[in-house]
Length: 186
Image (cartoon, rainbow, N blue to C red; front, side, top):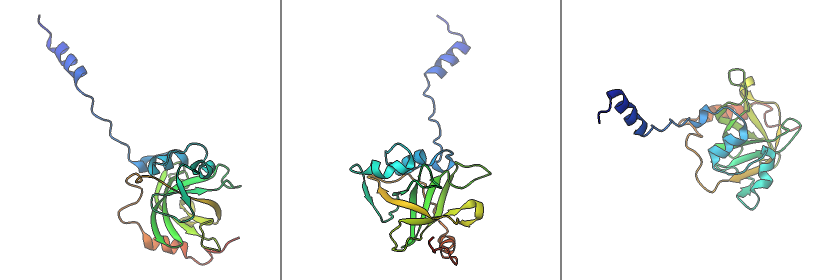
């Protein structure tokens, strides 16, 4: 039985394995902070960001000291009705860390984009990370708002690759954090 060349090519193409779709880099993400933090950290918690702190109880270790790869949980507040979660990408000093997160600043005029190595400054009186300021792209510096924080959730495994750049701007982070008045609380 003779098979036509076209039919043979179609049959072989159908049997050939399809190439794996190229994985989208983590920083190309556009969406809410919760799915981004879950993917970047490996912490399997669902629900609004403010629910993560209680959701981690008994499932993950929690604390009040930042560690690279941990998820910081911003409490529900008037400015953050659903809270916020972000992954600590680098420790700069005892009051400054860098975050990688999504849906904070506007990028090209819209929210939802991922941002890498964003400055987070502890402005709490007792240096306990209970109140922070976050770098905000729209003002090219630390925003004026102070946000309450529940704490940090520590993942069981390693975070996704790409949460920190190879050469983050530590100098920029420190300048952002230590500008006059940046550390004053309400």
